[in-house]
Amino acid sequence: MSLMLTTLAVMVMTVHGKTFTKCELARELARNGVPRADIDDYVCMAWYESSFRTYAVGRVNDNGSRDHGLFQINDYWNCDPQNGQRTKNGCNHPCSDFKNDDISDDIACVRQLKREHRGFTFSVGWKNNCRNLSSSYLRGCNY
Image: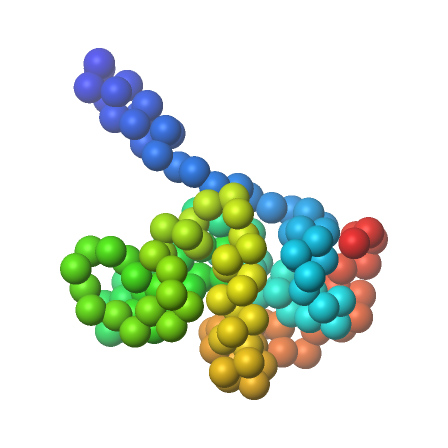
């Protein structure tokens, strides 16, 4: 019993991050300079990629990589998992930077990916669910 409580305490202590609501995330994105025209897309993508959890880590992909954080940034192409694995690290960050409360670096990485891909098509969650958002997606959110 003592071992189980210790394990639970360690698990609780190692989860650092935040779960946003839709409106909280919209306000945070606006505060970080995301253009108003893109906020719906960022919020929708975050919902389908991580359920608004900054600490989310995706299942192992077919190529052995994983996705990290609010926008599920891939650890082969866009961040360094710092596990000795050789990566492209296109956003020049360790993956741990994308799994905390500070989403400014996540936003910078998504902006870069959006430029490189000429839109949000780098995100499977966005492609499958957010491509044709209506303007009422964030109705009621003041941002």
